[in-house]
Picture 1 (cartoon, one colour):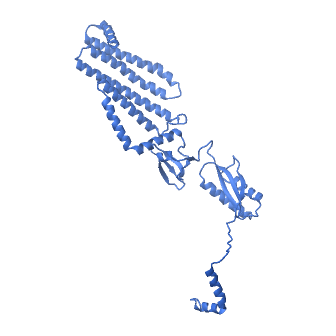
Picture 2 (cartoon, one colour):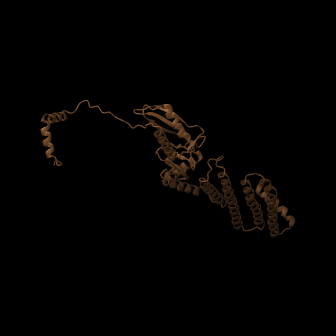
Length: 385
């Protein structure tokens, strides 16, 4: 076998240092240590300075941590050769080699854990380039990677000890199925949170409106739920699974953060539309919340039942609607009142086609009784003197 051939070649080389198995074993350990040290020096003095010239830091972390597993791999290989040279009992040799393999697997697992943490940290610092990797999703990816590497480590350790992992895998599958059924709702929220972060339909600080009419500023996007702060300073926690099934209106989305307002202003019939438009346009231009790009304008929207309907159309910097609308309405009311333009209220005329017959009979009876009967009613009233 190639492995035995390689071992025989190494053993033949070590005979140059003597025929004693213990001396050969010592030489194998020393040589493996020297080779490992030389490889580490190459990493530190040659490769690391080259990688350090790049703008990213993640490659520096990988190179710095890659030295240790390479060193242990070379050193433990020499140690395993030394154990074979001293001709231990087959059972003791097998256990010793399995221990060395286990140590080597653990060393590589630690390396994978470290570079995964460094890689995820780098990815989350560039959320615009890698939308799925956000600061809030970093723990999820770390946990998933750690579970994966841990499972692979257990698998290879079992194989190194000649243990069939099939039964363990079947048991793990049954446990995973039971956990999945028991935590179905939690897992649904978890995967919905991942999809929300991956799609980037909204982010922290955006104003959103859901199907359930909840509107507020997003304060936190978690793996299980999203929190929004309403205009009443009430924080609402909504499960991500519910948000994933809802239509989301992101008022902070689009090419810019500005938002257009349409503020209706009715005036009385008989008012000069040109004068009204000039007054309302001046109100919009002088308001502190209104952006001048795009320019505000006033639309004559139509003829209402009791008013001429106008609309102030303008842009504000963000979707915080409350204060801009209040400020514009107040200024418009004062300006129209100062100009003598009336803001009407609905008026209704009631026409009675026919009175009920009993009411008509009562009216005729009062008329037939005359004024004397009316005086009699007044004398009977409690307020009569």
